[in-house]
Image 1 (cartoon, rainbow, N blue to C red):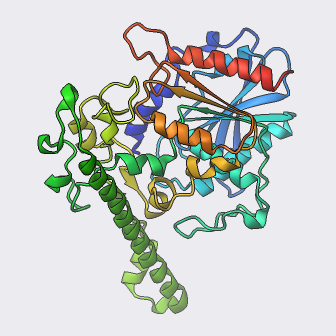
Image 2: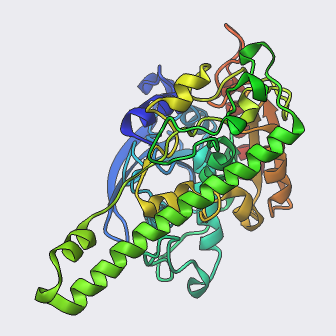
Image 3: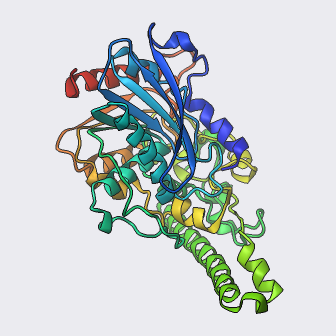
Length: 419
C-alpha cells in the first residue's frame, strides 16, 4: 500500500480525538527506539498505569502506526500496561516481508521483558492479527524448525532469534491474513498486468450482465461466483510466477557478477543491482462487498476504501498497489504467504479472545467463524460487537463499537490475568 493509501486506512485504527486526557490520570508514557536482531530500526510507546503492573498488552500492525490505538485507554484503565509498536517501515509495505517483520515483534517483546514484564498479551487488530499469529507460531517452535527463508528466498535468521512466547492472545476485527484477504478482493477480470484497464467482460464484477446493480440489489449467480473465485486464484498464481521470474533473473545476474567479477557484462550489473516493482491494479473487488446476501452481516455496501467500487477498484489507492517481488510473495500472495491467520491459528494455544464487528467490510462472519474454530486454544471466547471494521458506529449517531469492545477486553483481561 502506498503511504497515501496507508494514511487513509490507518485513521480508522486510531482514536482521532486521542490526547493525554484519554488515558487515566497518572499514566506514564515512555517512547523508545529499538534495533532489531537483523539490524533494522523500530520504535514503540509504553503506557503504564499509576499502579505497577507486570502484565503488558501489545498492539502492532505490519505497516500501520498504532501509537494512538483506540483500545489503549481501555487497557490502561483496566490496570494493565499497553505497548504500541511501530513496524520498521510505517505506512509503506513496498518491501514488507512478514518473516523479517517477526524481528520487529521480537525486538519489542524482548525490550518489555528486559524492563520487568512477566506476562505478555498480544492484541492483533485487522492485519496485526496475522502478524502476531505468525509470530506466535514461529516462537513456539525450536529454532531449527522455524522458517529458514522467505517465499522470495531471503534468509530469515529466525533460527537464532530470541522470541518471547506470549501468555494470551486477543484478535480484534481479524481477517484471515493479508494474502487471504487479497485473494478474495483481487479483480480477476484483469487480462494484462501492464494495462490497468484491460478486462475480460465475462469476469467483470461491476458489469450489469454479471449481476452488479450498485447498492440497489446486486446479486451474483452461484456459477459466476465459482468462476470468479477460480479466476482470482489463477491471477494470484500468475503474479506469483511473475514475482518468481523477476527474483530468478536478478539472482542469476548477481551470480554471474560474483563469478566473473570485472568481466561481468554491464547488463548483468544493472540487472543485479535493480529492484523491480510490481504494480498490482484493481484489488478492491470482493463480491461480498457488493452482494450483501453473500455471508450476510450488518455491513454497508462497499469496502474499506469507500462506497464507489469503480473509484476504489480502479484508483491509485488500494491493497498491494506496489510491491517488490519479495513483498508480494511474503505478504500479499494468498498462495505463497506464510502470514495467514487461518494457517497459524492452530498454534494459538493461549487463552484467546476474539472480538468480531458485525458491520465489518473486511472480516466477514464466515471467515471469523473459521478462524475461531481453527484456534488451538481450549480457552477461547468469541464476542460479536456492533460496529464497522474500525469499531465505529454502523448507524449515524449510534454507539461506538470500540467502546463495547474495550469493555469486553477489560473484562477478559481481569478474568484471565488477575493482578
